[in-house]
Length: 164
Image 1 (cartoon, rainbow, N blue to C red):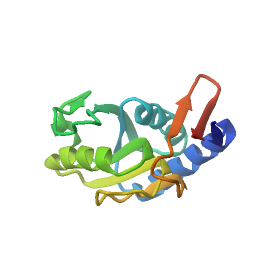
Image 2 (cartoon, helix red, strand yellow):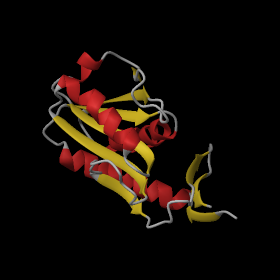
Image 3 (cartoon, one colour):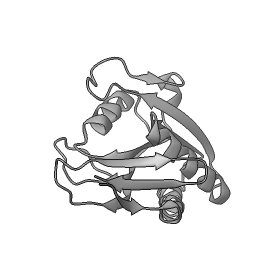
Image 4 (cartoon, one colour):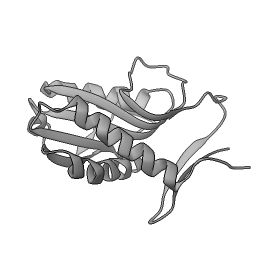
């Protein structure tokens, strides 16, 4: 049985709020790089990018990062060379934070190039961290059973999150 925890309008409001938080936290940086974890993190990053471009004078770039979530030590793929991020503000975006494994390995990979500023964003934080990763901006926090499955669906005009 699926229980909807976020609907389209709630996600839109969260995206707008997170865009303002990113903007306020990176005011002094002329360039902000949004890096979305493939696939849903990238879709969320695109939505944040759209809002951010309306409120920020900074140049905003959107990049995808692909990681094998089952084996994060395998090669991590980016849309561009890591060196491009040097001395820039980076915002790493994912849809759901469960144990922190995906984010921590992405952060490790991205920190090799010394960014000026680094923030993390998730739509849903499940509060089951096994890795020492801090989320700077989150939509909601959920205290769930470890066996619960939380999923975010991004469709054209209908986005929602559910727990089952």
